[in-house]
Length: 273
Length: 273
Image (cartoon, rainbow over all chains, first blue to last red):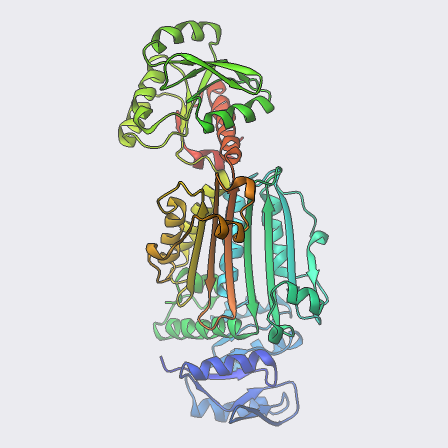
């Protein structure tokens, strides 16, 4: 499909990553981006993007919408901009895919629902990770006590600037707890130093941007071991998920879907079709 | 609970492993075992078990049943004995847990069904492996194309006497195929030599009895990797699942369950309760 995208949040790295994948897929990415910065230019490879400041955006978007009536917005901006941006998209009737986290999520979801506004809202666009979380939580529902008596070891490595424990690791740990494992969140091993990361098999060129997770379960006598791993280098993975979400949303708009609001589970369930 | 077990299939290693776990749990294991061998004795640790031959078993069991009216049989005998043994248990009204593979499975299931005979029939008693297979097949149903474009590497190691490819690996591969991965069964890497097994982290003392499986999925550009592992050393794991099945069946009998025939999924769903 020939989508026309406006990727908002430049010069942010997620917005950049989405633009790269979108261009590779042959999507048309317009050279404008809503930004928290003042008006300006931002270069990605050879292409120049005009940053649109908050002050000028309502005026500027009218012109853009005239030229690109089938525009879809991708939003990787800032937690403080989440609700305001959603209002902006609603006001100008621009369907959107939002990967930005934070803001008032209840207000966000209620607004797009009451407006029947086409959008995908997903704080994590890593499709296969969402799927793994989902099946582990189903496993916990279907098979209580499955891992009773087993020990759990959780190691997660992220760039050294990430101060808190991985939210994904916490979510997955809670499923294992429901399966009968005695484990406290603070037992999650955070790996944040260069030497430990290299020993944990993080490639050197991704030390500054990765998300590696290993969950190891052992039977009481040590004769049985289960291990689940999900290792992501860089941001491309999430950019791919975001472009899949654009593709999915575009199809729903084209077929005049009577469901308007979607999350990654909707996309996963339909296999992105 | 205070079960009384008759573990059939001595001198087989699975029968031995079940007896060890059952004794540890404080179950009462009677000193008799149906066997394909002629009458004889078999020692496990300090305890002597009387092997009961096919010729004498119908006579001998009457006496045993008189002494142990609440007897439950565990069957780890031989594929050729599966249907005959089921008839024997039905004839003498002995509930049973059968881990023996082979035989005519349709006849087996139809017979216990038509007789409302209490039993657990499960060719694989490894609970957490059954659960993993189940959720991966659910994942394939719920999330078609999830791993589209990913590559898959499957490595499985078993004792060198195992000539064929792991059936569990094949079942799990078929789920990944349904999730969009292009992979042929004959790409499964069978590890059967000592040096490769040691390199695959099989403990030396389990080279002659283990089941190690690793499934590695990689995104096209190599930046994303998922890995699932299940490694079992020895037979204890299956013996534990078997004793859990005994426990489960005993509870169903005690409560006069109107469901009579069970498999590992029933046990998993109830968390063994």
